[in-house]
Image (cartoon, rainbow, N blue to C red):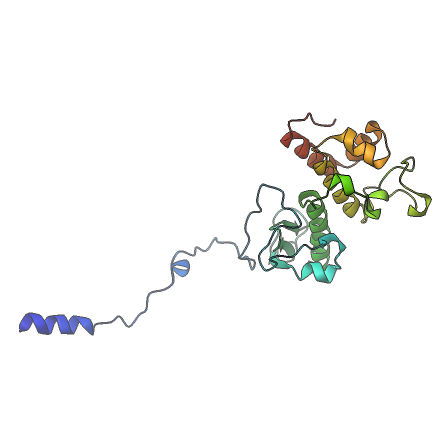
Length: 235
């Protein structure tokens, strides 16, 4: 009987101090104050525009054709205090901005300005460039017609360019990113062959090589595509 009463008594025992969640128990004073807690590393493989992304299943969006507000609507934004040089007020506010593009997992950030608004604009611009470099749109070479975004970055001597396209757009122009994406799409479809892409663009192999080498990020992305096909890098 005594043992039975002891078992009943144990069933009604409780602690007046509930256990704290594990994250609170292990949170140290030196932990950084980040408001962006859902970051994840993007896949090492370049995503395609037809790939399903979180919250965008089945969609094939032209991300670079979106307005800033539309593209921001697909992002998670985090703010944090930037470290390093930049003035005595650099670390007093969480002005640095990090953007994560949900459909692709691509992350871009800006820390150089004291204004969160300016850093947000810079991070969004960098996100567009990273999307151009990393996201491939599948194309069929037999049915391919170069889009106007690609024609705009081609040299004037291209036989398919046309006079109505206007002057050539260079790497310093914000419209260069869509053209860069289209060029990498073509190079990807051509198995990394610059000569094959050059034939389609009405240019010599040397002219296309010089176009690729005109921008460091474009050259790096193109060489990564070529390396995946066992081809030598462009220099």
